[in-house]
Every structure is written in C-alpha cells, then in structure tokens.
Length: 199
Image (cartoon, rainbow, N blue to C red; front, side, top):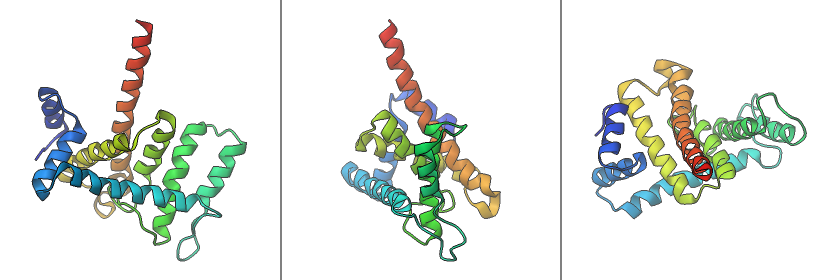
C-alpha cells in the first residue's frame, strides 16, 4: 500500500520498476490471482473504453435520455476534418474522444469510471489519442491504465475524486492530472529517442 507520490517514486527508483508493475503486483496480492489474470481484467476495462468512445462517434452520435445533451463529439469530429482549431488538431482529437465517452455515459451507456463516471472521458480521450500519435501497443495501453490507477489511488486516498465532495476538480481535475502524468512519460521517452539521434 502506497500513501504518497513521493513514496511511489522512491520505490520505483530504488527497485528499478514502473508504476504499472507496482500496481499489477498490488492487484495480484490483493485478489490472489496471477499476473495474466490481472492484465486480462484491465484489458476488459480498455475494451469498454474503446467501445464507448467509438459508439459516441458513430453515425450521428448519441443523445442523453432527456435529449438535452449529445452528438457534440460527432460535430467536433466533422469540424476537425475541415477546419483548424486554435488549440490545434491533436487537442481536438483528444477532446472529441473525451466528449464521446461522456456522451455515452449521459445516454446511460456502458463506460469505465476513470476515476468516476463524470470524468469517464478524460483518460480514454488522451489514451486513444496517444495510441494514434505514438503507435501504442495494447500492452502499453494496459500499462498506461495500471500506472494511471496507481496515481488515482493516491489521489482518492489523500483527497477525493468525488464531485459531491470536491466539485468538478475532484473528478475531471484528478483524471486530467492522472492522464497528464502518463502523457509526460511518453513525451520523455520521445525526447530520449530524439537526443540519442543527435549524439
């Protein structure tokens, strides 16, 4: 059981391991199941995220039960094909994935709470964008989710991920911080490759 990010970082550096591996081992111990079984469970989460994202972007999109919200992900997708947003193509790509997932949630569809239903689009939006831009394998995406889970666990145990307690920042703010930390890792890896080519 880890209680702070400092503790996680120190352990990872001392034992030359990754956040993902630390979370996998914790799950193995907690559930009494094998590594393959733990990874298979996380793959199910990844599959749910992908299906929700794709559902929200298919056809005309989805609407909430009340029909007051929905179909904005499809509009963003079409806009991104023909126009150049101020924030750039990549940002809108991630955003449409996030909104797509949130719209599926509002339409009472199946989503993966990351860390809550209200913030269910943030991590998939970024993760599936990284899959496109960095060519992530399924194994890397699963590792991303394990590392994100470990970071999320620290936030949940020290503060809150519940909107009812901490407002939107508790939900979307936590999800954004978790996803940003994972994205930074891929940026560092990319920079290492660039530097190695210069040397």
